[in-house]
Image (tube, rainbow, N blue to C red; front, side, top):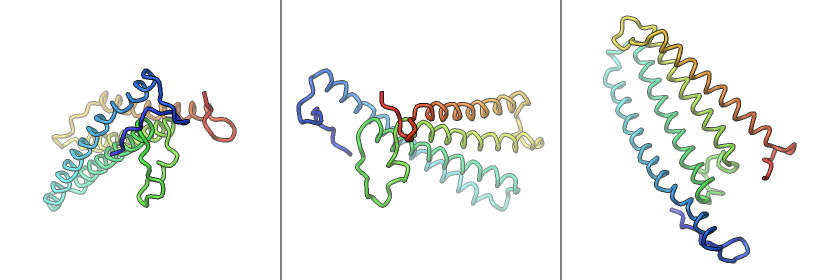
Length: 190
């Protein structure tokens, strides 16, 4: 774990107490990121449970049932990827540098992460997760003989509308980010 940086500005002077307190308050986010790591562990357990369910019932399942379980596994992986982006990117952006430069496992996107890039990556991940849920809904809703086919036409419609809103929101976030960049491609400083 990274040690908190002392309350010293770039020329070596100590910060006044109020700026030091405000700047140091970013460390209050640390328990939030640690909690997300625990949540990721829960998703690992869920993934293994679903994988075991698939393996142990593979001969009993129809192709459609196997596809639904695999979509569930993909959903868990995508949510886990979203957690990694939030944990690593958020910590790096808002709390403290991880100092991973030159590390062979450093994610490629981490070298240029900022709040704007993180928002767009999160929006795209949410769209991916929503797409998997929507696909599962379409498959299960079409399976009228199944006891899981308890989707109403209105429920499917609302899920589709919400997915479209996610897409439009991501486009809006990307457009606002593009407007905030100067011609050289770097974000404008305020």
